[in-house]
Structures are given as structure tokens and as C-alpha cells.
Length: 261
Length: 255
Image (cartoon, each protein chain N blue to C red):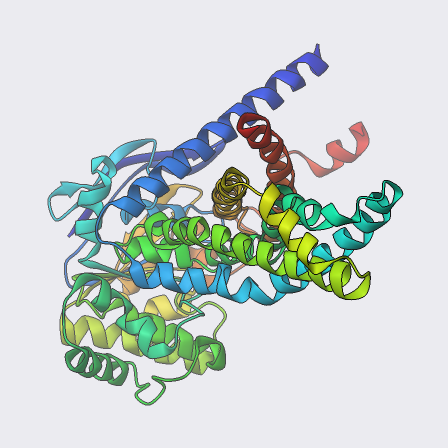
């Protein structure tokens, strides 16, 4: 579905992608794991054409997103849905209008059809009945579900999730996990999840990739990742503060640093 | 050496920002005149920039007219020329104070809100969300605001002129006892059509400046809380200063 090839990207002297190549399979849930600053969010943005990498290609449906013009990217985006970390609902519109927004923009469906579609989408995320509330009246978990309903309203082939469970309580996270799986199984939506939530990744992923400072250090099924003997992967899975992935930012020796100053 | 390099960097940065601002407005205008048109968005923005500014413009205009009459009466009575008070009030308001004060008030009320709104849309990912829904953010957010400001400002200025003259009448005629006939007679004799459309040209130019600067600064605000707050301050300061400078330029060209 989406194939990233030899992707390189740098912001100043921070490398966000170092010759990354990977494949996101159709109708599968792929979780891209990584700590903060690992480059996973940048990679996600580049996959949807919100940013351009320094070099390399990202093939989506046989087209290279990194070299498309605005119009062609907009055409492709109608096949993509995205759930933003903060849901990104329009706070001046109520829930109904938020979800109806892409329909009103890109289709000429009548009001009654739009109403039906929104009922179906809200039922899918278990929130039928909140149509007339404003985003500010809903909890974090609920706005995420509304954001998801909006992301799937045009029936996309691929849905991107940016940190879908961050900032949610365990139950709300569980709900989001279940929704991601439901959409994937029932509608056959290709799902690409960027996350640092390892528990959630093990629950939903068909395939997990771990990104570490711009390098793809592991790739495999949840079982393979769990049983990996790579120390970096082990540290990530176990969540230990120090290990091959260092606790401190600088590699200068602490004693030396103090003494020289 | 370092100081010279800093000047160079600063200049390059400024030139680049100005270039970006130019491209930004060209794109927004181009987007405004190409379909699909967004009439509903334009109407909503006219309501926000124009209709909701009526009260503040009313109060500003009323007191400006009143104080002009008071000051004008004091000065003119030194020459025994109270009779021309009507033309003095009308010309100062129509040619100068109407468009400028109106624009400054709209900057404070709507310009700052525009910058903050766009900045917050950026922080909360609403701008990339539009992108992801295959909607051009500039066309959706910025273009309607610019069209709305171009329409609203001349109308608000005309309203300001009217209320300002009313304020002058209240103080000059009803309070200080200037003859009503000479107040309006002098006003009609001295005010030419060129004065009125000169003021309205200014209003259109200021509407353009307010929407351009507020939108551009909001759209380029850093996506942090401090970023948006400093962008809002910058937008108000930059817009107000540009209004005063451009006012001088237009006045000198029109005279």
C-alpha cells in the first residue's frame, strides 16, 4: 500500500530519517513505535505529504508522494483519513458539522443522506446522540472518537493515527484500540499508527516497526518484537530508563564535563 | 565583524519575511477569485469583522465628533469663526479621523482576534487537519477574511463619518449654541465628493492591511502558547503602525 524507500531527512543537525525503507501492507495494522524525537511523527507527516523529505521516495497507490503537486496530493488525500493527536476538531462547529465537514466540501449529498451517514459513523465509534454538542463539552477520549468518525467519513482506504492513545486513561485507550481493530477488520481499512504506547501496540499491531533517532532498528510481528534479543528493542519493550538508548542527551563524559568547566 | 554580520542577517530575514508576506497575499487573493467560492464564509467573516464592530465604532465616532466640536469651537471662537465649525468637524472626520480611527479600532477588536484564531488553529492542528481533508487552508481561512475586510471597512467608515458628524452636531449646535443653519450650510459648502471618496479609498486600503497583516502573522505564528500571544501583539502593533504610515502616503498622493 505505502512503500517508503531510502528516505533521508534532517532538521539542522538532527536526523529524523536515516536511509529508512519500509512497507506498510494493505489491510493490515502497522504500528510505528519510537520515543520522542525518534522521527516517527516527521515520517508520518511526510507519508501524507504534509512535509517533504530531503531525499528518498514514498509510494502511495503507485504514485510518489514526495514529488506530487498540490492538486494531485489533494486527490490522494481523499483516500486518506487522519486522526490527530489532539483530535483537531473545529471548535467553532458542533459535532455534527465537524463530521459533516468533509462531506459538505467534497460531495453534493443531500442533507438527509449526510444525516444518515453521520449517524452510521457515530454509531461505529459508539457516540450516537452527541451530534449537537460542541467539542469543548466532550472528554478527551470522546473527542478522539469524534475525530476518528470524521477521519473515516469519506470511507478512506488508509487511516493514519498520530499517537491515538496518548493522554487517555487505560479504559479510553482500550476503546480506541478496539475501534482501530474494528475499522481494520470490518472495513478493511489499512491502518498506520504512530505511537509510543507499547502495550497498545502489542494489542493491535499486525506488524511493529521501531524507529530510533531516524534509524529503523526492528521490524516484525508483536511476538517477534516481544522475543527479540536486540538490547535496544529489549530496552524499549521493558521501558528501562537507561541502556543502549542513553538516558542523557550528550555523550560527553560527566566527570570530564564538570572538571573542565 | 559580528555586528555587521548581524545587520546582514537581520536584513535578509526581513526581506525574506516581506517576500513571504507578498506571496501569501497574492496566493490568498488568487484563491479568493477562483472557484469554488466561499460566500457563506465571507458572510460569516463580514458579520465578525463588520457587524460586530458597530457598537465600538458608534461610541468611538460619537465621542470623536463631540470632542472635535468642543476643541474646534474653542479654537474658532478666538477668530470669531464659530460658523464654520460644521465644515471643520466634517472635513476632519471624513478625510482623516473616520478612516484612521475606524481602522485602528477594527485592528484592536478584529485584527487581534484573527491572528489569535489562526494561531490557535495551528496549535490545535486544525490547519493540517484541513490539509488532510484536501481543503486548502489559505483559501478556506484567509481569503474570506480579506474579502470581508475589504467590504466591511468602507461601510464602517461611512457609519463612523455619520455618527461623528452627529456627535459634532450634539456638542456644537445643541450644547454650544452654534447656529444650526450655518453648521450644516458650511459643512455642505466645504465638503466635496473627493473628500468622501478619498476617505473611502483609505478605508479600503486599511481593510486590506488589517486582514493581510493579521492573517499573515497568525498563519506564521510559532505553534506554542507564547508564539500565539506574541503574534497577536505583533499583529496589532504592525497593523497600527502601517495604517498610520500608509495614511500619510495616501493623503499625500490624493492631495
